[in-house]
Image 1 (cartoon, rainbow, N blue to C red):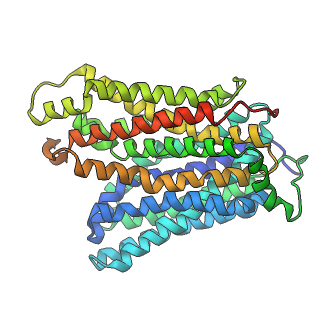
Image 2: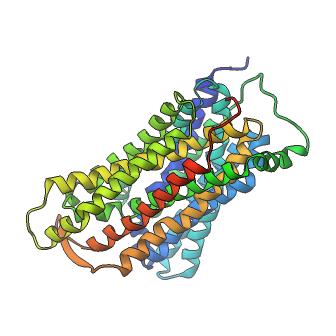
Image 3: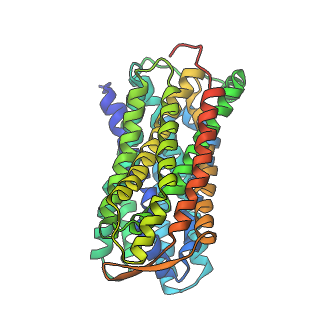
Length: 441
């Protein structure tokens, strides 16, 4: 007897899939350990993460039709590629440890963590989304927000587990951790794959026209699609630019001793934004309104941090060992919390906003094409921020819990000049390009 229950067939498998692939954002937990173990600089290994996000977006864009036609095949591809890529990453880290400075190890990590895992990320991200919207047709935002929140919460859940594994596995713990997690995540994703199913009454359109229809549907409202793609891309770029510098900013404002705790808190805000903003959008006449709220909020907190020069002043106080300001600390934390929440909210509302304008028939394919923005942002957001930090301001040394770190307060502050401009462009795109829908939900 078939089980027809929206929680068992949609919500639980979506969480199993997204809580697994969302651990890609744990990269900062172990990136330095990988670099040290294989004998390369951290900047060289960082490209693995950028490639993972790039191929997430590209695989979603090019494999969206496969997801549309067969969620079981796509979710199985996701499980195999994500777990296989993670295991392969562990293998090449082990190889790099035995052959310090080996390009084979570095390229192997790029291929496994970036390309193979990236395919698993893209197909795994898309697979449960349409299914959720079909099962929760009256609360589509809540449903997709729940799953995408799992993607955001994965970092908060997995980070302490990964750190505990690194601390307990001894020599070679970094590659052993990858192999252990590859097995665990394959089991989680395979169970999700087995459970995932669309409602019994839903029948997909058949025939070759499905591939062309997605493009044709987009062409009915090309300006709207460009607007959605653009504001999605810019919001991710801004989020990655700040999140990539988050740990150093926290140390820069004098909270280095609790950087791990605050990183988990920002991850919670990220997840809460995914669930909260999408659930809130269900109550709005025009779902695009929630994007206007996100961008205005982001502009306000960024402008406040720029006007008060909160990061620069706090950093200068830390460097000179002068008293820090509680007010400036709160302003910077508000910036981190708000940007993380808006970053998450931008993700969870995309599929439902697209469905409002283009309907449900080809939503996986259209959503996949839109996720190409995520892939491109993965190559630009953190890399542009790193470029600014490396070329603006001066590096100074501070000591946190007995360890010496280099910080660049002016560089971190300067990143905000870029992000506020991009947030303004995003807001204008939301207002003038993404007009109120004329079709029913």
